[in-house]
Length: 373
Image 1: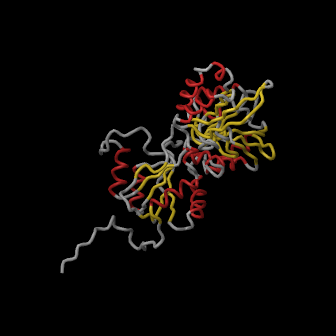
Image 2: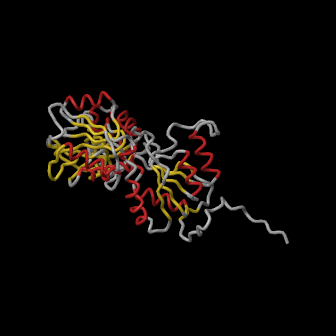
Image 3: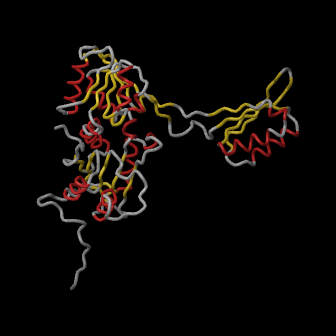
């Protein structure tokens, strides 16, 4: 008898038993999205599931890395990872082809050849209260923190982006206008209410609509000057989310000297060296009470913030000059050094969040590309 068997995806490491715990990818991805909603990511970012092996795809081992390099991909293959969570998205600019010519294309090729998915959260992890910036703030010592730029809810509390309100006489003409409005797509919550305006009985109309429908409503109302002159248009803002957003403004429980803060940061990030600039009129002994921080490249988030100290991975030369001229000291730790240490904390949180269903490991090959000599 001839038996045909499907080949193993890849040879497993010697002595490593097959784990009985697993999650299907279509179950794991929603769980990861629930841990940190992708709606919190910046609009320019590329987050979520970036590479998906053909379904069904079982995940037993999840590899965490800050940057997905070819060395980390080889590590993932050797360690039989089924999914890589890369904090930075390895695919950012659109790929026009997938060949063996460039290193990012090769990442995609190898991932698909070895049936390894790739997921990236990036700025969604920056925004959440339990994310990268919260971890970075712990390096300052005991402090309270608030986001520098609050995130907004992913949707409006009601349907539509605008509210239109106007008053008119309860006449047949108003009924005709309302009938035409009801025929416009994307009109929501249309209500009428009898009111008295300047001693006259009138009907107040209120409706929510989309940006596209707003143009049609305004065009219709503009045909009647009495209705149009009594029309109010309100922009419906998405509510701000407390404790959620980019960067952090940290108020230390007890002021500490700049030199002490530098040593605390080096200890927290496990770095032998950092770069720093002392603000004009300040010294290494000057007290730091408030620090504004942003993991990674923080110039756009920190610029103009009132604080004694800016803490981030990298800033441009001219942004450092601006901060120093304004009396703000700066600590730079290199981009990924302000992020990578979070992965250990992330592993523990995801283990609980995923109910210990899969094996979560940290990359041993992931490191900042810059070194001090």
